[in-house]
Image (cartoon, rainbow over all chains, first blue to last red):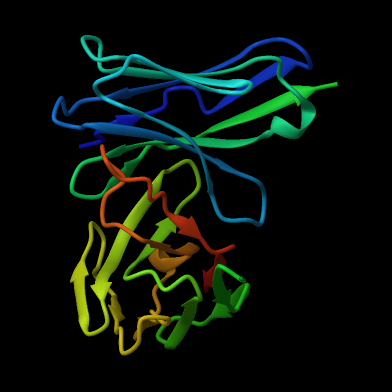
Length: 109
Length: 118
C-alpha cells in the first residue's frame, strides 16, 4: 500500500522556466509534508516543508503548495536552474517519514 | 562537523556472506535511521533507534540487524546476504523523532552505501 506517490518518474524543463513536481498521499492524518532533494552519489537533503494548517510555504525560488481536500502536494521551482537537476522526494510525517518514489528533474540550459 | 558518515561507499558481496555497514554522526542526535532505496522506489525504513540501547523495526527489517551502543554509532548488519538486498543504503539522524508541527528537525542523511549481492 503506497501511501505517498509521485506519479512522474521524470521531468525535463528549460532553464528559467517553472518546474512543477507533484505528490499525492492517501492518509488524511498526515500533518507535515516535506521535500528532499538528492544529487547522484549523495544522500537526500532537506529542501522545504509545509504544515497541514497552511496551504503554501515559500522559500526563495521554491514554493510548496498543499491541497488537503485533494490530498495533493506540489513543489514549484521558479526560475529553474541547471543546478536544480536532481531527484526530488516528497515525504509525509506521521509517526515516521514516508517517502514517495522520487521524480528526476532535468533542467536544460 | 562531518554530519553523518557512512562506510564503505561501495561493496560487492557473495550470497550468504555477511557484512556490517557503518554509520556515525557527530551532531549528538538521539534519533538514527537506516533506509534502503531500490531503483524507482522511495526510501524504505529498515530500522531506527531513539537513543543508545534502544532500537526498533521499520517497514522492511527482515534480513538485517542493528545495535546502538553509543549515541554516535548505528551499524547495520547483514548476516546472510541475498540478491534481494542489493540496494543503496542510507543512514540518517535527527534531533527530534518527528518533523511535524512545532519541530524543525529534518533528517540528515549520509552519502549512502551501494551494496551489490551476487
